[in-house]
Image 1 (cartoon, rainbow, N blue to C red):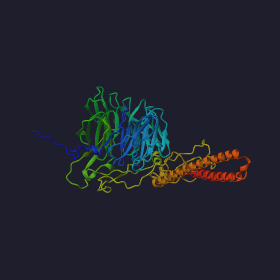
Image 2 (cartoon, rainbow, N blue to C red; image 1 turned 180 degrees about the vertical axis):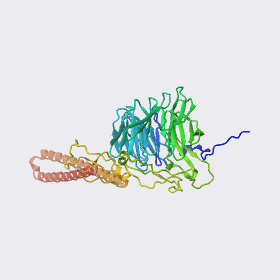
Image 3 (tube, helix red, strand yellow; image 1 turned 90 degrees about the vertical axis):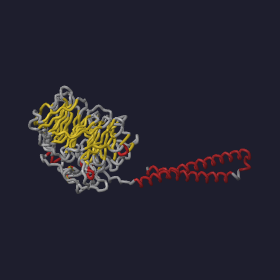
Image 4 (cartoon, rainbow, N blue to C red; image 1 turned 135 degrees about the vertical axis):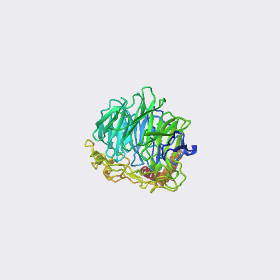
Length: 548
């Protein structure tokens, strides 16, 4: 008699549930680009989705409370000249997002709290290096202001966004880079390439440490570092069957696990939860989300369940653990874009009867603070990301994470270009904003690439002050129009009086000579009155122009 032993796991009964339509986001024109990207990025403050846009590329940024049908004229982030291919929120500042586009430029944006009130076209900084489209942007997990970009020119570049400078340039890929991922502390970098190989680099020096064949199929592959050092990959075999594998960095040629899934042709995106060691496989064009648990026991990657929907997905984003509802034992939250314009919110939950905080489900998770600066990282210092307990910082009302820090702004410390001409009068050139890289956080600055040190900073006006100024300008314009009409009427009267006097003199001849001085005096008085009115109108016009 045989007994089947059921594997013990607290995530064995995780199930997914889609929120109601009125709690989702509707009428979103998701990008129709054929580039293999998730088209979506989420953090505890905002939801960003790449959308179709005429005359360039754009993506929409929505606060999480703006659910329902989205207006067709909703403000966008639209500074790119070509379609946007990839976006990524900064893990250390929930208001900063990076975007890569077909116009070969990477832009970093500052999103105000509460979302956009008008279309944003001015980025904080432009990162210009790539010669072809940029299809991958990735932030460093623990170092502040460190951003990785990869383009179709086969180049991988690591930037210091705080200064706009290139830290590392990796040019050893023979073909397009499909994916890249840092390990837990950011000391190693794994990439997959169109040449079917997987590579591990030292991201500070760009030195290639090891490489191996990833998947034998010709379609796109993906690779991610797991928290404890293993590498998880997805791809295709020669028969175009989708498969996943688990590998050790020191033995890339010998996969620990290699499993075939199905024969679908959509690229699979592995979304990893480092707190629970759960991996969610989401295929482009699929209507399912499969999730697995990685454990030290064979077969190492354990299938848990599948979340099934009726609509195929065009893109998907995973909320960081800081944005999950711990009061309902929510361990993951997905934002899934359908072809019909609906962004569906899916909650993955562990069934528990208790309403208390479940410490076994929520170990310390990633915080929003950076562990080291970009300068410290490039100098050779490694540091694990800062973690914190959700139990200490949970809102009982909303059931989610509440940020303890105020809104932070990204500052860019641009070095002075000696070729720039001095500005008139003060002789000042493009100066540097306050440095942010060494302070462990973002310091307040203007949302410009260059800050001028010639003259005092501009005053910040509230919306109430702006409205009052606009009202005053409208009143001044009305007074100007009224005075102009009065001047025209007086001039018409003067001209009519001059004509009458001329006719009278022609008729009466010299008999009316005694009345001529009086008429002339009256005309002079009217002309002087008209001149005074004209002067007052000119003064009002000048005041209105100065107010504008």
